[in-house]
Amino acid sequence: MIFASQCDLMVIAGTSLVVSPANTLPIYAKQNKAILIEVNPENTEMSSEMDLAIRDTSAITLPKFVSMFKEN
Image (cartoon, rainbow, N blue to C red; front, side, top):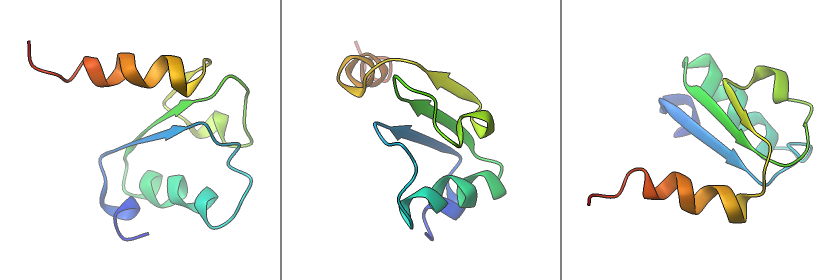
């Protein structure tokens, strides 16, 4: 929880955010004014709290996301 409360950006991928304590991590991040990005084909109970919601699977989205940060 320490890292969640200190992050600037949190990517929440492939989870329904129903199971505790994992579902509290975005709350700690948001209290730190972190940007929240949700990657999930379905809406979750916390989707309205996200700054960006990507409605696709993690298997498709995360490799594209990571490639944006790789050096050419």
